[in-house]
Image 1 (cartoon, helix red, strand yellow):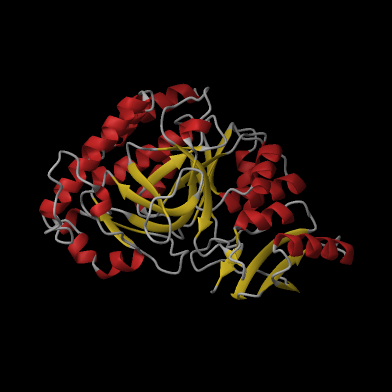
Image 2 (image 1 turned 90 degrees about the horizontal axis):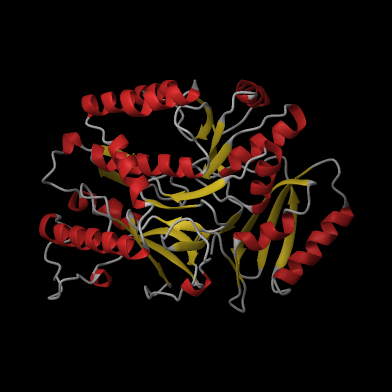
Length: 437
């Protein structure tokens, strides 16, 4: 029955919807399925052609880029373009929007603002469909089958008519990830029980669901996918073990830039048909694959408001090609790891940099700590706030202190604070490491 419903949903309902609302999600999803089967050379050609087309169009039609000199050769050098950030996008929004497209036809999208600055971009329906089709593809990579029941968590405070309609047809129960009452958690998990449902949502949110499920109601899902914040190892292990799934991590931005996702590897495949991804140092120079740097991305699908060389505020590492697994499903380039935001770095006087993973690698072994947050206000100290269980002891505190002092090479003074609540960022996302330097 579910197969029949899924077939009707994809081939009839979505196609009828596309005709009425000029939405091409079904066509684009089918195209993406075919693209995923291409060779490395074919994928490289697609990316190169789309990049050159976008750069040429932007220089000729977008006010912000007009006057930019093009290269004499066939391929335009993207490195000659300026690097954008959220402040530039905010201050030059009018010059970045394509004046050749009626503004009334454009759709506004905003980032979460987890970096402290919320960006605002505009896109066409077709560009929006490209992002949604990519997300559906990633869900399929995680085991989702169109038409099956879904438990989804997210940050939308109020579901629009479109999203409510989507929830109805896609058999989705939506849970707001800003906060979770035990009543809400029990209700949605009970509804998903014995339904062969799929789980998707913010990494921290589905982690909370797994912890509640372990103590209160046993539920299994057919698959799971995460987005929005970091899928830490202890998050992943909890979701996998309790829900009997293999949760897949995805990486995109609120500006409809769909960068990468997991399938058969612990690494993520970079959607090179969607994006041109650079990993740069603080001076704008490309780092070697295997080294950490700033994520600078060009959305190859965006013509309503081209974002060329957009520094999103994240840190990541590309996998060196000599380390690519011989047996892998796709021929997309590979992203080794997304480290987090550039504000998620603790520094010492000797210039040692500690990422959020440095700390989760310690705290994940202490079940007596339900949540923690590291804050750095000075170069010689950090504040560690912790929410603890009744099983927490002084011996545990001393053990953590010794490990943190070793991690920090004894260069940082450690101050511990036991708290009842650690508030999320204004976007609703939890932030484990906060640097105010």
